[in-house]
Image (cartoon, rainbow, N blue to C red; front, side, top):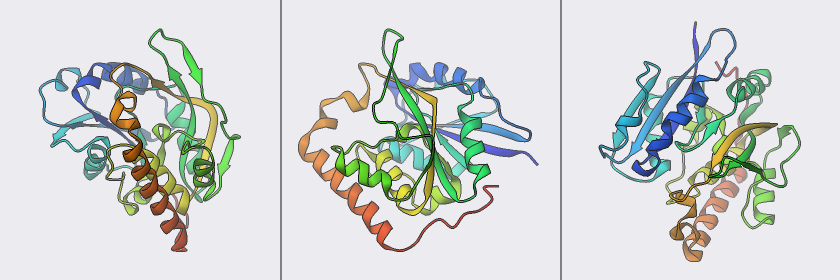
Length: 254
């Protein structure tokens, strides 16, 4: 029986031009045995600007919906995610060779892990790359440690949420991505870390594109009042989950 990894991508018109690069990085992935990937592209809106960039590939599905931000688009895509695992791939980013296979090996090898992340590099407009300081060691990430680091380091996590690979059932149990105008992926990461052990791969798994239209580079993203509100609700959710004494008990991942 073929088993699937569902790659979920939220896209809006300005970032659509990067989809061919994301697709090329996905096509380059090699998976073991009976595993395959399917790509769900969900537009955050209903423009005519994204479809021309969607690859003509039977493994790729494109849908649209009313705008609500990338978290809403990704969560809507989950309605059609029929695989054991979900992998995040933002429209303007690129996977590195072997990224999917490494994520899969980590979670298939340890049923007690709920999610995985990997090292990421900023991909600059001139094609050069820059690493992030403070990457954790290669191996398991224990529960609550991401929240502790995030709160002690000006709300910066030591692992990148854009590299997330997660068991589908666990993702659904947490309700998908948070209903926030930004930081929705960080909110999910901290929630996952509150209920499940994770994994960090020290091998680079993602090239995180920096460009002029990037949402995280716009003024509203750094507005102090909104940022304070976002971080407060993200932290409160993570603490509440941690206090419920509920945790991921493990499974086969199949």
